[in-house]
Image (cartoon, rainbow, N blue to C red; front, side, top):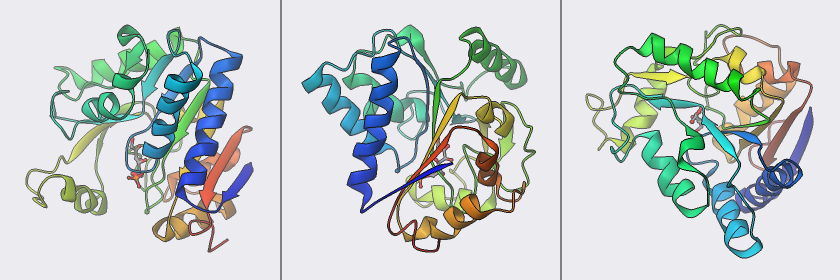
Length: 242
Ligand code: F6R
C-alpha cells in the first residue's frame, strides 16, 4: 500500500487528479471507476480544470460508478446519476455512451446487477477505482458485515448511513433511501488499481483501521490491504490516529 499524506483537502484533491490524469494520458481509453459523496468533488473539479486548461481528453475513457440509490430516477437531484453529471460529466468531453452508473429504477434489479458486472468484464476490468470511505468503514455501499467476496447487488443501507444521508433529504428519514445497488467488495478488488481518498477528523478511526487492520468484514475497507496496488490519499486530520 502506498500511503500519501497531504496537508489538507485541496492538496489531496490535486494529487488525486494528478494520479487520474496520469492514467488517462498513459492509456487514453482507460476504464475508470468513480465514486460519489463529498470527498471526490475537489478531485473532479481539478479534472475539469485539467480538461479545460490542459486539454485532458476523456473522449475514449469509459466510466463505471460504484453505486446508486434504489428507487431514485436519474433526474432526482440526490441520485448519483445527477451527482456525476453535475460534478463531472457535464464539464468534460466524456462520451455519454461510455458512462455506466447502476440504474436505481431497473425493473429487475438482480438482472441489472449481473448486466453491470458483465459490462465491467467486457471492458476488461477497471483500470483505476476511486473510493471514498465511510466513517463506519464502508466502501461503496458495502456496509459493515458485507461479504468480502461480494459482487454487484442490492444492499440494505446501515442505519448510521441512512441517518448520515438524511441531511440530503430534508432531514427526513422516511424519504431517505434504504436500499442501494452497489459494486461488491469482490468487484472493487478486481480493479487493477485502487485510489482511496479520505479527509477530515471524522475519517481518522476508519483510516486507522483500514491501514492497520485486522482485515474484517465488519470494516470492509480493510480489504484494500490485500490489493497489490492500493494508494491511500489522506489529509493530516484523517491521518491523525495513525
Ligand atoms: C459513494 C460511496 C460511498 C462514499 C462514502 C464517503 O459512491 O461509494 O462509499 O464514498 O460514504 O462519503 P463522503 O465522501 O461523503 O464522506
